[in-house]
Length: 425
Image (cartoon, rainbow, N blue to C red):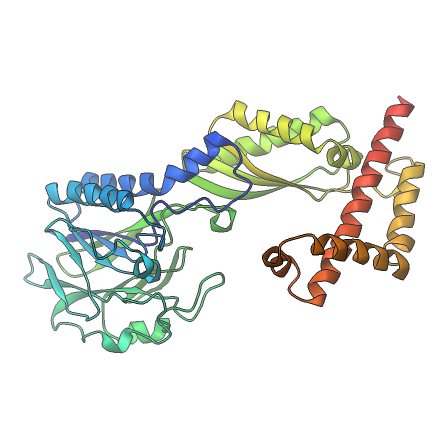
């Protein structure tokens, strides 16, 4: 019989909501419970596929805020695996090292948590007589600036060797450097499969031998967008490895850009949004798709969309609700009015004023100084901690002033354009 295992990492159980845009209570409840549901689905997959083992390559928890309730939930799921005869192998990641309950919970007998020394564990003997060993190493500190690879034992002779390591590899955007090493170094060590964790985006770095970063099984905000899952691996009796990805996430975050060029009616805009949402919903493997929508392109609706932002938000949320399993995380307005010189729309005085503001007012030194003075006055009224966050240096104050000037001008012009349009009707 082959040796089959599921490889996952970075569940971050019960991590707090990190998106201020999740103001919808129903949506917040879905995201809040999604990390637990991901573990339930992973356990369900292990039992349904009758695998031999579940490998968790670090960051089960989400740092120091983890409660004992989280740990008890984990213990209950691991008990389901124990009752099904499925072994569990765990290494601790940087977030686990911060958890107060990491060392306090008694887990089921079939669960093995690797310590700070890499001592291989026999997982199974294949019918061919070859043994399968799991090697792993945990780190007690949230910081691991040096490679842990030199601390791993060499592969057991005439056996299948699987290594578990929580590592940033050579580095990844949005992730701290943690137990750094190269893919080439991992390949040269002689293991048949490296079960990695830490980086939240899935990537199969190599296949001879396999070096797999499974990604997290459930995204938590728009910066963890895209489908999420786990790796199901099989070691044949002859020792040949094959892998496949299995979708797990309850909800997936996605960025969507919709070009409104050529659309001039509000109802047509909503139809375009509805069609785009349907495509996204049909393409998603998860139960729920959570969208950050960017409206782009040149459209006569640009002014009204900005002026009536509250109406736009309500209308689009209503469209999403009608589809089911579709949610709006945020709407970004990046569209503009068509250029009057192209002849696509008739010029009006507010468009001419907008051009004048863009070319003469916003770049003017006097205007920028006035806006900066207003920003500095507002900053003085904020608590010191918030001032340091918003404007830690002079360049930051300058950027705040510029953004405020542009945003304020856009808002005023939007209302002027809307009012002039209403007067003409």
